[in-house]
Length: 356
Image 1 (cartoon, one colour):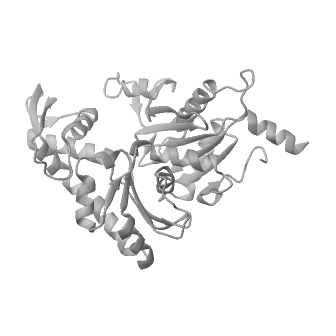
Image 2 (tube, helix red, strand yellow; image 1 turned 120 degrees about the vertical axis):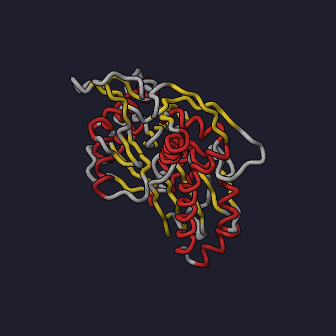
Image 3 (cartoon, one colour; image 1 turned 120 degrees about the horizontal axis):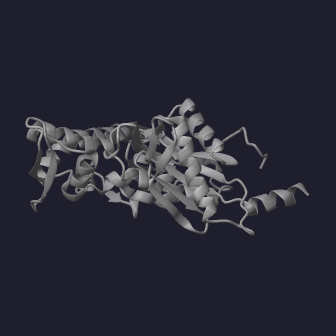
């Protein structure tokens, strides 16, 4: 009887994988794939504490709100900075998923949820993620290290006795890890990633052009003409902001060489973390990495020439995986679908509301 009830509950439940990223949050549902891909932004009325918008609607408000409304990210460097707002954001994603995936006459049980987290987080930070997910409506919460999830999403043989080198450059953190036999052998978690590159461009504009630009403008510049190495083809684009001296709006033209110089310091720190991880890797696994190469995941891996620069600096092949932006959530989804064979790569909430 208990087994039958368990099977019925599992049938009614909608298991989901969530990549709770600093910049974007993605939700994967079994047999349906990725059904939510929205910015990790929440707009809050500071007077009443009311949540006004979440996701894409909140992102449109960034930098455009009156003083009593703040459109912010509740996660900083991949970890929760505002617990209550993160809980509301998770609840929004979970409810939206359930509403678009209802089973059996519109009823769906509380879901099992697996969430990707940076490999350098503390036990307190892990507990915050678990508690936020449980309070948002999850029945059982699993956590998986983001580099492991990325490697699974890239279809690397992480359970074999061989070295798999993955570099996941997200919005808030860069995760560098060597994985073998389902576990992380050596790793680095660096708080330099997509957001820091955007900030580098903002700082460069202030220093070189005395121009104050917004984060979204900096990101567009990075995407359109940013690179890790000098390019043969010259690129440029207009950069609009406020002149810090006159206080008036101004437009200047910025070139790809300028952007490359602005990003250079942060790129070198990412490469230094990769080299340090290589130095800590056992020789036998390093031999595998030299053959298989370094795999890049995350949105930051799409920066022009980054794979070429890493290959040059490490003297090893470097490849960008297919669809690097969704690697974590796809890998977490695969782990949840194959929970019996991939259980060792996840940590499970011990305090489950229902014992299955």
